[in-house]
Image 1 (tube, each protein chain N blue to C red):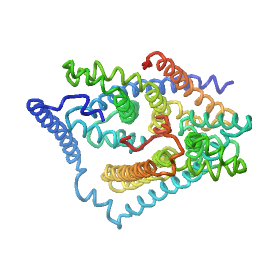
Image 2 (image 1 turned 30 degrees about the horizontal axis):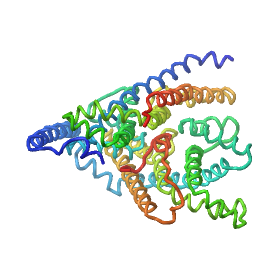
Image 3 (image 1 turned 90 degrees about the horizontal axis):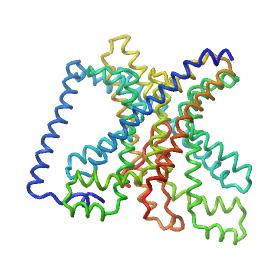
Length: 215
Length: 301
């Protein structure tokens, strides 16, 4: 039991790091992803092009490479960011591309009559998107959006390779423990992730049922 | 396509506004790019000689990067083959008529999908040696990729098999085929065709995830670039750092784009093929598309 009590603090810190990383990156991804989705359906061609370029690039780049660039590349242009903020930025920017695709599929799923009615009422593009289309779009994409965010929580584990002391990094850090203790660490790490992902999945289910549009 | 639905066709004034916005936005982007370039040039990163090292065989850099790329592709290839095989086994197991097989296989699938890929790799790399099983970084990486992607592919294949029209299975049984024959001769060929685009998309994810080898110091592309950097830094200071990283990233992106295009091409083919007529379209969940350490799926659905 010594092993557990000695490393309890370490574990709690690591769990909080993963949780904080997930929350901040998730927030960034949601905001940026929605913005990108709005850009992709906007009337201004360059905005569409820019958003498409962003999404295609980030979806085809391994997250490790994104990390790599932000943490080792940015200093080359004299922007030095810490490991944690670098991790938040990497995971957030990467996930935003997937959020964008989810939201865009939601926008496409909103019945055409809704947008047409909004236009007929004289709403501008921004107004019809904000007041009419996006609220309905978000309701239909709750499950895919939830899946993206849950996958994102798992993706935060890559920060372990870039000096962030989050959950996964406990395994290499405590590698000198004996077999039983290290197994315990593994169980703890897995449980730590599930403590975040399982309630999130439940929450997604509940939100989905509450906001579902009955047609 | 929503574009024409969400806004009126721009009139002359709107068009002028759009042109102005385009110009301003273009200037902003150009300014940003210029800022980056100026900063890079200020640090001397744009000097031709620094980039020349990437293409100069005498420096051993192209060879080293090429070998690293080969190792990346090797991991990806072995991983793909094994993961596909494991996925098929798991899919068949989950559709088994025996309840205990179903329960065991479902638990395994759910477990491997719920755990981050990196944790799986860490477990194979750090924990197994404690029990006397020593895996090299190569096999730890391949093992993690196979376990995770096998579970994901298992779900993909299961969805594919279930999407084959019931009549096909019934007709096959009616012809007197055995369970194995029904699966291998009737269901799997049709399911595979339907699942091909998703399968390729998942294999792109697998290729992307090989970059996790960087974290356990397997000399794949990224780690290869990093070791070159460390080597050069000893001799010349960090003057080639940025160039080598850019090279590694560009190679990754190009390969993934190519595979994504392949997936889109395969999807176009399957749409038109009459051989998938007896299957129904199934959509995959987003977490499958995003992968455990990354993810890509052909855009423009």
